[in-house]
Picture (tube, rainbow, N blue to C red):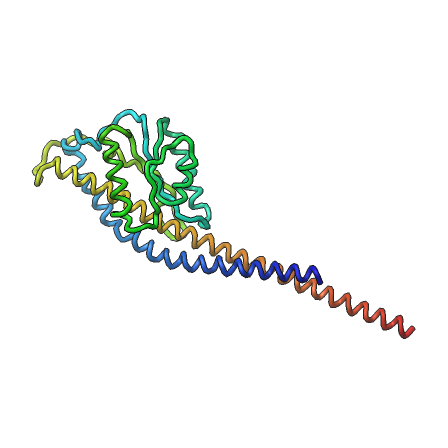
Length: 284
């Protein structure tokens, strides 16, 4: 009887856990729909911004632009985007591993801007990286509240020669079941290989101003897209993780129910056997 009570308590405990994981799955699915729409909506604008920069890349105005300046990397800065919460499978762990590998690949002093509570926690514990700023990835508007303040600080430090390279680590949202961690170089702005100055073109107001505006717009689009992709990827990873947890809970409940029924049947059989044996002993 004691073992049956233990099994019943375990079944009740797993059912409670299943209710939690199911609720988290539904919440993540609801947030994913909004995040996916937000991530896919500006993709056309981001592609157009890249194409504009590509069309300007051959102009002589880009050659002397400070954001195109390539110099030896003594201090590197990484914009590191992870999640605000856990319970998302390997989502945060994959991004942290990418940051560790990235820092090993670039022999320099490292600084980081953390986007997401999990990113900030990791950078705060790291001894070999300085945390310049931290943001919550789910807070406010991705462009105005996160991307623009980050870019303002990053561009200032790059132009003042405080940092020599800027990269961004995020998770590209491809589909609900497919998200890939990516590392992209933001600064110095990279031109396509083999690009050569093609001379001046007729532009209004002038090539220098147009290149300045275009570069900042492209960087803003890249960082905003990275944040939106990270938001969608986190919700997709959490939804899948909670779905798997719910399925595993169902399997455990089924197995425990079978064990409970077998133990109860064995107890009933034993009681019947004892009653029969007692009856025979009395009649004898």
